[in-house]
Amino acid sequence: MTIRWLIILLTLASFNNLDAHPLRLSLCEIEYTSSTKLISIHLKLFLTDVNEALLFNPKSDELAFCQPNEPIKANELLLNYINRFFYIKANGKRISLKIKQKRLNGDGENTALLVYFELSQPVILESLEIKNNIFTDLFFDQNNIVYIHLDDESKSIMLNKKTAIHKLEF
Amino acid sequence: MKHQFQLVFVLCFFLLNSCKENRTSKNSKLETEEELIERALKIHKKVLTLDTHADTPIRMIEPGFDMSKRHDPNETGSKVDYPRMKEGDLDAIFFAAFVAQDIRNDKGNSRAKSLCIQMIDSILVSIERNSDNVGLAINPQDAYSLEKEGKRAIYIGIENGYPIGEDLSNVETYFNKGVRYITLVHSSNNDLADSSTDPKGSEHGGISKLGSKVVSEMNRLGIMVDVSHGSDSVFYDAIKLSKAPIIATHSNARAVTNHKRNMTDEMLRLMASNGGVVQLTMLANYLREVPPNIELDSAIAAHRFKMKDIDKMTDEEKVFLRKEFQEINEKYPTPPATVKHVVDHIDHIIKIAGINHVGIGCDFDGGGGIEGVFDASEVMNITIELVRRGYNEEQIAKIWGGNLIRVFKEVQAISERIKSDSSA
Image 1 (tube, rainbow over the protein chains, first blue to last red):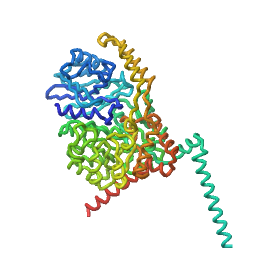
Image 2: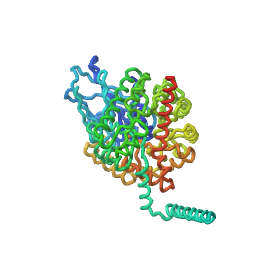
Image 3: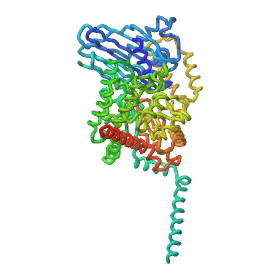
Image 4: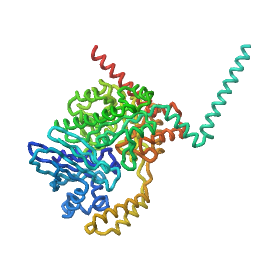
């Protein structure tokens, strides 16, 4: 899992090798495996964007994500923000998100915060509605690529300010 | 009689040359800005304009995105659609199918292939739906024949060789779907090659053994080898390994802007001796150093100092505060990269490598877009700046597509030779 996160992070951190990532982009991977009945969600967000969104300061270290001195309010503020701009509905029902794991990777402006959610989906997945307009409150041209892997099938969509929600039926 | 005829001939020759000099003099000294623009636009319309790199396929996977409609780039961030290609007189473009690097195992490779094919199919569907205005181009001459039909030529590339996985037959699969260049690697190392920007550094020392087989297969099939995003060693390996000239679909000159995605003068010289081409890109950070903006930094710092504790703010207060910060940013904008920076790079590449080894690959929808060339509708501003600096029609034709088409033809000719040699 660590290696996988590292690889994805490196890609996120430099879609075009942009030191200050002027390309406004985030990556999200949603995976459903029928054998384990689990939905996993990886959100990969630039740390500077997270700090700007939560604290109005891209370089702030107040929330010290993934550090020993991370304050209790960090997860609360992060989840509150994510819930405003991101959700998934499995079979029409919005899933309550709880952060299972977070990780930091990369250097400087390219540091990314990876947020991992894992959810039980005991009933066969018939539809998936995804909302992802994260950071569109900061940047008009923010794009959020979403990769959806359902067992052996993969699909990609792009969501943004104009097209924030998309529903897939299986 | 014979001498009289010769005298008349010589006088006519000098008279004609004198007229020619006067016209040149008018162009360079007496031509008004309006006349210069008019002349530039005529050249822009006349020559084949080919952009070798756009990440527009990531727009095509946006549900409901319609390439036949004109989009406002200031509202949506979108940089390319067919109406804006027409507005900008952009005749041909390579749409790059991009898949983000993920885990390098069978499962990851299989997913990458599936996502890549989905993206290529989205390009093909878009072409089919808009067949009155655009056409699929798979050979060099297609750009010219489609232009004659009044259609835009759509070529297909792959950005990141990750979807090839470890299966060489995938190269032919993509070729059969219309792919005519493959960027070996993207922003992190893959199984084929090292990236210029992977924080882990070199893994293969350039192109891997698998990568060298992929290059050979690309040569055999007639797919151009793209070294943009690769480390410097990838460039040198590609020059050695490829039997055909190579390309850099979106890279600039490092001597002008010191960025590891740009190419050194030594690389530019080698590109020239290889017969390849470097396509200039419109990414601001590759075009110029970001200038300091003290006024903006001071205003932001002062506003932050007055801010109430985040924990005590309501959502409404946060929205209001966001608006205030956006207004400050608009009040003190950072000087942007401009078309002058673009042509500074072109000038330098021509000085080092010559006129036959430079082209244009804007990287629209992948971060490309600067003041004056913000989207596909504004690409004629590059031509205007080239004319302003004294480039003539023949030179501009080479920069805007002629050089890339020359390389493309050479790549196909070498492919034919390889195929005939192996069947002999």
